[in-house]
Length: 198
Image 1: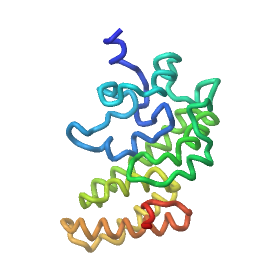
Image 2 (image 1 turned 90 degrees about the vertical axis):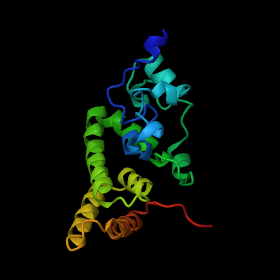
Image 3 (image 1 turned 135 degrees about the vertical axis):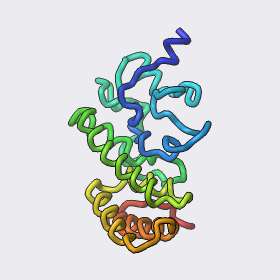
Image 4 (image 1 turned 120 degrees about the vertical axis):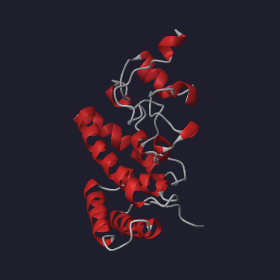
């Protein structure tokens, strides 16, 4: 049994059974012991031994995500309104996408969701590879998770054009340019990327 529990199988560790965007989380891109393998990825149970969503969805029902369950949404979930009203914290992934991710999967299927998530992951990886000043990873992860895909693509394109004359090692300026563009896109969409100061 112990061996079986260490080999929980999920095809897509980038989407949590609960709807979290694991593949867009800073810890998914960390190095060393704080790196998260994604939902039911390698060594998942050592990092998250008591996830009730995994116990129910994967262990008991052999499903990929809760959206595939006939009982979804069950009492484990808050309402979408409650998730939307949760204060943005420094934790990640943001809870605001839980219900929309799962509702999308329920309506269109997990493969269609993963196609879109893979685009977000590519945009995020480009941001991390070319614009991360060592202090912007969480911000870029939130932008990749919360902004509209077209906004992400346009923002990245605009930032890439703006940095053409900037020295390649001037990563601080590059990060500042992209963060400014993403913040503007977020304002237009009514999306909060940083905690409001009180």
